[in-house]
Length: 464
Image 1 (tube, one colour):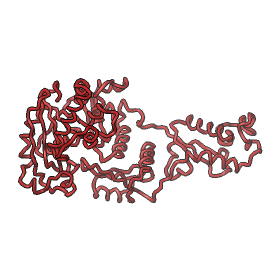
Image 2 (cartoon, one colour):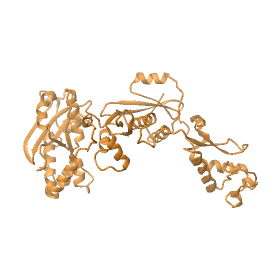
Image 3 (cartoon, one colour):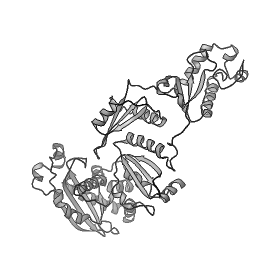
Image 4 (cartoon, one colour):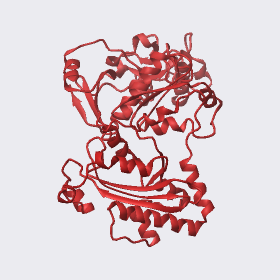
């Protein structure tokens, strides 16, 4: 098939479901190529040790009776490893097959280290003009046939036939170039132990790049940890900062979460706690300001700039906007005054008495000169500020947001109160402890933004 790629195995698995943590392999098939020549093929049913769900039997045709006397994975593992050892492992959606194989070998106390190549990604590279790259779409598009769809060897043979067809249509050089780009491993920095790539999962979480000491150089998050970490080392650096990180990293640490929200919360907290050199946006800032609207007309200034000591969720209905400096808050007010004909003196951004300068140049409607009703001016000011009003806490008390990752089996509940992150727990006893414990709230702007955005997704909220 690929004449310049030695030791190449095309593989397919059938399983009891889609989750390696809970499900098991029921069938394995593979064809091994060496320098483009088929050298061996092997297939076997596997006793999964658990019942095959009816819908899987309907899909694959593999029944509990068929696998009852089949060997277990432990019994076939040595033979399977003999075929794939040192070879590039290829499959259609290789993440699925490789994930199941890694889980099965892990249960036997072994770590599977394998170069992989996904033929779905290869199809996208070779035929970018097409949208569908699943096996059924490929078969329909290219007129391929099999009598054993959703059986391991049947699907392997279809993929092999498809790649042979692509080689004839597009030329061997183009196919080999695409394969090489997918098989090529990351170019790891000198001094970084490559074995971590076999251990880091492709699940949600946070990763930390360390240099010569324990202080992190960079902290990032992803819903696919392994893929994201590898992307840091898989090509030309997009910036000088990326290059510096690549040159300095000596160790990679990671922490798994149950979903994206957990990863975002953990990333934000760790960056503030550890202050990594190359993270800027999420670092803790000592400055935070907002605009406070006076509750009526009997005030020297209708708007005041307040700092973080006065920014509390219980008064958000009177606060408008977040700013990192007083200057930014003032510029916001100037813009509103100009846009809505408001009086700079009355809203507190110009000193003096009598008519303001803006009125003299016909940019203020004249509340400062007795030409506009103060109540009308106050109403227009409030309307101008309303789009920037901070959102009040929409719940009567604490809430929890549950996340679950099917692949890892991890479940987490993130507990919040008044836009503040209280805790993240992973079991009912810890959740009960959080329910019974009351602690002081510490408002964090990044948490407010994360939660506000997440709640717009109509997530399931647990009242606590």
